[in-house]
Length: 553
Image 1: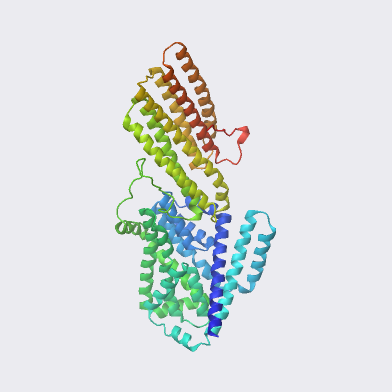
Image 2 (image 1 turned 60 degrees about the vertical axis):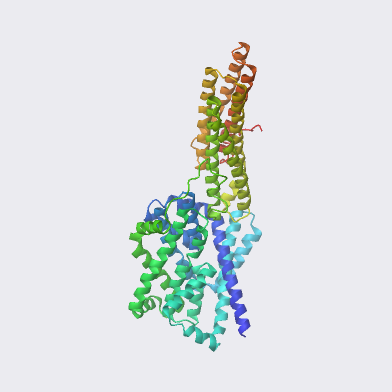
């Protein structure tokens, strides 16, 4: 009998965890991009951030998913720590929605949700409908798992040794430790609190001990974000610490209050919940979280400052001299499927900046013939090639994960963007080759030729800047300017090539210098083509016949 009960508990817990994972991932895939945009936009102050954190976590049903996303935002520089603190506080309230749902015992309706979800998955061709089907199926499976666990716990009541052990749990510190360890292992406070709720319903745990276990669950829920931040930058570690410190200080305050007035607190929650132990646990979970936020909300800035004392110093700046480093993605960055495309975009933006700076460095070396600048171009090009390889691998990796639907559609465009940026870097290297040829062959460029190249470079710099802004901000703001500039640069190339021919016929330059000039002008025009491709990568279709440039190799 004991083995049967253990197997039932394990099976029920497995279904519960699987249902919660499916439901959470389904919501993230169906609406993750929109929720992420809301999270990013409405966190300008701590109060609005808190409200968004509540709503986001209530929808996604996972404070861990919300806090890991916040840690990822902070790691990418999209969100400051002072903005993150409000969202983290809100997430702690939003996570109590799961226990509230569980307390209403919707197990009888679970088969309806399972059937509805399966039908949507099997018979609908639309991706968004399938994702909603995943949510419904996950919701149904979750409550079927709860029903199996509840049935198993009824059997536990008939096992004197187990009931005696559970009833002997009288030490508040031990109860907090049990809650912490269980949640740290399962990595979901919602699951642990739901198990406590079921045990309370069966009379296996006393209500006061349930309160202390819930406090342990609150601290244990921080483990996921702490683990995710270990490989991130210092601000990412600080964001995870905010979550941890908030729960530790909040738990200490509530623990002290319970030690002083346990009977009164239990009586108050019991009055709100009636004679339903499950409702008692759910209400205790919600009230504790709300109380924590009310008490600690005014001290949000102090929490941030405390994290700077625990994690002092700043990250090493990553510049163009960095030795083959990734900043936002890879093994040393926080990974969250909901922010993976944003992290890749930030890394691509950084790669584009390196390529653009390298092009200007190479053009400067072409005129000054500075050997150090020429050598630096080759070093940076090595870094750009490294980024090209690593970002491409990262895009392959995240394309196999559960990305939000809108993000999954953009992966193909990102592959093209990384290739276009790498080609801009190659053109910078070609210019450096020309500079070395000038230096070694003692080849001259006329003042007129230098001015013409400078004028064309200014135009190319502008179109590259507009394109990167358009790509990184996902905005069509510069679309018209880019199309005009691309036409102007094409015309500029024809004009400079003709001027080059005129100088050759007048014997005003050598054929060797003329060939270098012609190659550089062609290279700059191709850089503009690659920049235009980057800008067009955000568009689903070319508007009003605007053509996508076919770039020559």
